Length: 351
Ligand SMILES: NC(=O)c1ccc[n+]([C@@H]2O[C@H](COP(=O)([O-])OP(=O)(O)OC[C@H]3O[C@@H](n4cnc5c(N)ncnc54)[C@H](O)[C@@H]3O)[C@@H](O)[C@H]2O)c1
Image 1 (cartoon, rainbow, N blue to C red):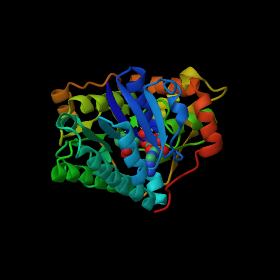
Image 2 (image 1 turned 45 degrees about the vertical axis):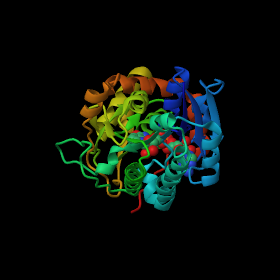
Image 3 (image 1 turned 90 degrees about the horizontal axis):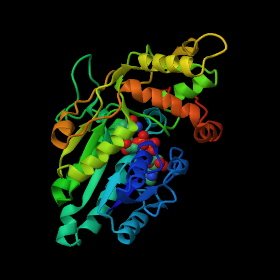
């Protein structure tokens, strides 16, 4: 069984990946996570007692802690998800994004390289440094077209620029030192255990609280939504079958405007938890747009589908119903976050 370091495993996608790997007994995992505001070990309750799961609280920027973990755990692969991930927060505090996403990734690469170099040939050939990135590195699309693996980088926000930088570093360590690297760039994820600063959980929880449902600008920005468990499965497939040095785009061909997303959530809630009076859509308000808001993202994931045989199991209509139902059933998870960590206030409003 493979031994895997997952960085950022207490976050939204990292926890879905660990639940997939440990829950299905696919790998033994160490979760390396600093536990920032976005990290939450409660998301791993279902697997935390498994002998296949271990937790190490550490900062990916800390060379001593990371090196020690490599030496002690002797991983076959590292799947790197730890990052500052919220575009709005990158407008308020861009340097924090540069530190974790750029310098943290450089530190991990260097620690991985030093660990990998003296490995016996067979283990060396099998080792993978897998970097998890975003489609936002490609910039913004007009009304037509899709991002392909060959689309030139054109990041526009401090978040996407920091992720683009980390992608370049990973390729450089692959090219210069022959470290076997894998990259993937994925579209917007949604699903259970999503921190309620992001659009979908924010709207569900504000709706249930009787609060306003803020829509940036006119709500015309388009995102290509992927259910988080489909992403987790794609990441493991890439780890097992991907060709070192290659990049794979991941997306579900589920484009929706933000306004469509919010109206869909309102309609599902009207059905599942009707209000005493009126509809949830009555709570929609239009607010000042995000500075530099990219208009449209859409992913062409043909390479992943044709070369590795990946296929998403959920489409947006099935995934969003599951997601709304999950938030209705799991107040134990999100209530403490809303009460203690983040109550839904506007972030990143000032340029
Ligand atoms: N959420 C999306 O829609 C999406 C889409 C494509 C790619 N991605 C990428 O996937 C990865 C995971 O995204 P997410 O949405 O799960 O993020 P998240 O914000 O939910 O989780 C990030 C995790 O990283 C940890 N972390 C942050 N800084 C750290 C540090 N210095 N050292 C160790 N741990 C640290 C946090 O504690 C948290 O557990 C990120 O690299 C992100 O760029 C996200």
